[in-house]
Length: 223
Image (cartoon, rainbow, N blue to C red; front, side, top):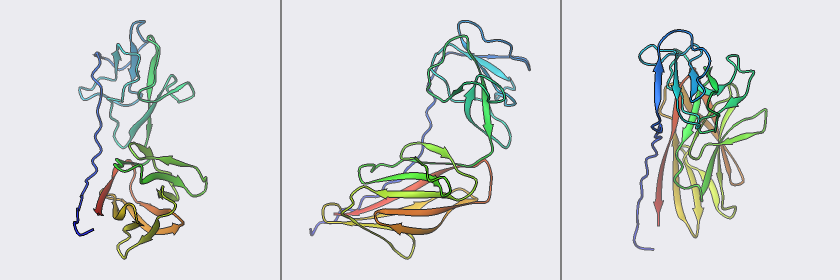
């Protein structure tokens, strides 16, 4: 076609914390949960005001409000040592339950993929063979052999790389799409890329701990 349309998209990760009735409690020991609330224990973490636990009158598990230097909260557990029942944000929990924050110092990577109908994003560890979708979420990165995988859904498309490691998806129906992937966080970056069919794999290089990186996706589509 003669007309050319260039679309630039900047992906931004936005974390939204739902508003619920939260009551911060003073003291260094949290005790048992009240029967009409869920008690959240920092398990070594603290609130901004220094408190170590709070109660919430909601049966939906909340994102952590605690901070702990050098760590980030990954989930909740009914036991401080993680040996009990595990809960993730958004899970349903019974009132009267006490949950302990669980902490990790591993890096996390997330993305906001505006075109999941064209391609999907995954994080994987080479040794395990399993992979986690990060199209609109984040996940902990494996300590070793972490890989970003881009899977183009149209098997009839031609996938290639340019000299800057940009993915070029050539399709008669879609036109040419230039997909630029970058991780703008110190210590986390994309290494060399490999193509296998309609899949592109990038090595994820890590030299820091406890960083949360958002995968920047910039797309240029020429129609």
